[in-house]
Amino acid sequence: MWWERAVVYQIYPRSFQDADGDGLGDLRGAARRLDYVASLGAQAVWLSPFYPSSDYDFGYDVDDFCAIDPRFGTFDDLDALLAEARRLGLRVLMDLVPCHTSIDHRWFRERPDFYVIRDTPEPPNNWRAAFGGSTWSRDPYGRGWYLHSFYPEQPDLDWRNPEVVAAMQDVVRFWLDRGVDGLRLDALDRLMKDPELRDDPPRHGPPPLPLHPEHATLDHVHSRNAPDIGTGLAALRAAAGDRLLVGEVYLPNAELGPYLRHLDLAFSFELYHARFHAEAIRAALASAADTPGVAWVLSNHDFRRLPNRVGPANVRLAALLLLTLPGCAFVYQGDELGVSDGPEGPLPRDRHGRDGFRNPMPWENRSGAGFTTGKPWLPPATAPGGSAAVQGGDPGSMLNLYRRLIALHGELPTSGLEFVDHSEPNVLAYRRGEHVVVLNLGDAPVPLRAGEIVVSTAHGPPTEPKTLSPHTGVDIRTG
Ligand code: NOJ
Image (cartoon, rainbow, N blue to C red; front, side):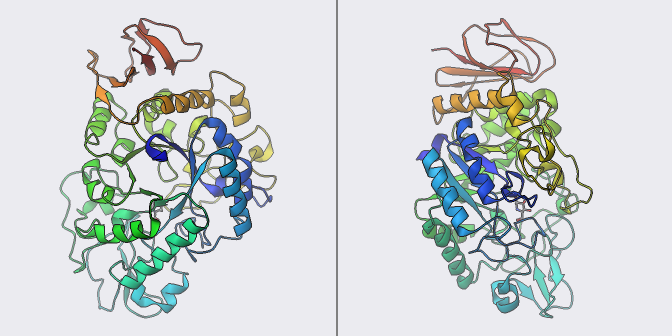
């Protein structure tokens, strides 16, 4: 399967490239920049939503599942993007948001049976929404309380209604028939809940993955991840045929199994959020060892940028880690430039504080950053190594490190990772076929055994050092 060793590049369309000067990225702009993605060596792109949206959640509140927001372009623009991708040998994944619609979707007015609505005096249970507050809000049409796992403007669809399932299958076929190669499925652990809507019990101890503090007070045994989740997933699979399905399942690795019975891939958020320390990373990798189909990702539009999460000193190591693991890896736009959080715009956009992870691409050092000729919707991102144009000409840049690592990713075996013991506690080492990857996450130099260095995260030409500097890693060919 093409994705077994693919690198997928995540495009956040509104911040990738603007072609019409309105300050918002669009499909024509994205198509123009696909040659850049191909030059990285990636095999595919995933486009975050470009459906008509009221922007309560910037595209993840969908007003119409079978349309394109005119701000992003037209069907002709999408067809042109698909054709350009094909010309460059890139596959294209779209985002599908099956769990909820926008409150402005006509279904919410016309088809209350498509949603979870209860006409009770009080909210039906104690469930808390992912961004805080109750999952229940008063229905603006006077029908009682409606359920929303995320923002109140994102009412959850009722996946226990066969008509909802059929409608969403139509949506899947609609886009795949247009030539899209696969789908990234949003928020799948929220797709199905306890049909009896029982209270979630209180949580004792920290959650396995980071959550909004209010959301984290409960153990979400009923408000998500229902035991019969497979029925919903099987319906998505039936509609998608053999096209790629990648699940956003916000659960620890050990709980991905039921999802991967139907999906090809599911992101590992356990590795994503692992403390950047050898032991924690080793544990996150080990817990995925028996779960084929785990896709590796360390960054996306929802959480702090890599320099702010793993620390600036570790950003190049994070790239080495991500791109030397077995299977499919996802790279979020801007990571290949070392983009950090912010800058913030004059007005906050996302109420959950995620603007600083979504700034437009810094293509060039000029007004609008080569992203737009107009006023960018958020200030362009910044990276210590400069814009893509500057980094392109610097052999030691983050951009060129990513290029080397993506090329290496294509040479490594698709499966199998064997930990190699190292005397230093904060060193992570693993064997991948003929290659050994060694990451020194600590603050002191460590001894390095001899071998041909294929890629080093250190600046400068590869040498054969006897020691590995702090926060430096190498891929060594041993065969
Ligand atoms: C996950 C998406 O990545 C995020 O941006 C969104 O807010 C939630 N799902 C809800 O759709």
